[in-house]
Amino acid sequence: MKLHENVECSVKNGMSFTFFDEGKVITFKGSSLTGREIVALDGEVVSDRKSYSRNSIHNFEHAGKSYQIQLVANSIVKSDIDCHFSVNGELIMSYKLNYEKKKKNSVALFLVIFFGGGLVGFNWSAGHLPTWALVLFICLVSLWGGLSNKGRWVCHEFITQADNFASADKQA
Image (cartoon, rainbow, N blue to C red; front, side, top):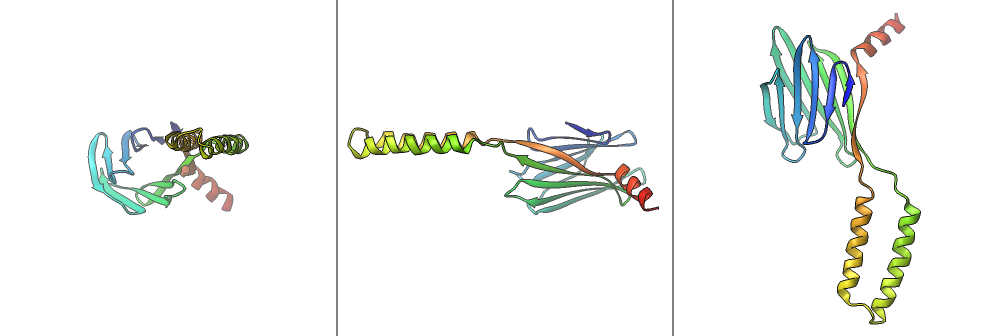
């Protein structure tokens, strides 16, 4: 997904963010499962390490410029991650990556669980239904409830160099 002229992001096979600076392509790839983070400049790896901390910083230099990519996990439970890209100490771009869950129809889910559970429970207690069928019903309802709440990862741009200049102009 292209967010801005200077950044792209995707979350298919781990986090992947691409920044552009004066014809250079800087990519950050990270995995929340393995903790491995790789930063590459024009395809050449400039930083490669594992990080399990909530705050990870990658610094590197090229052609007299110093670059920094900082990844901050604000909330692991809420899947809320910030990424900041700086050149020569100046913030160029920041964006937020979070997992947005679908809104589920809780009334329909409640009715299915309530009436279905009552029907299955009554038949099981009366001896008309074997125990494996009761366990299967509980597993299927749990699986359906989990799958119906599946969401997607979304990137939100929230600070750019243009925003910095605009706010400086307003203050002047």
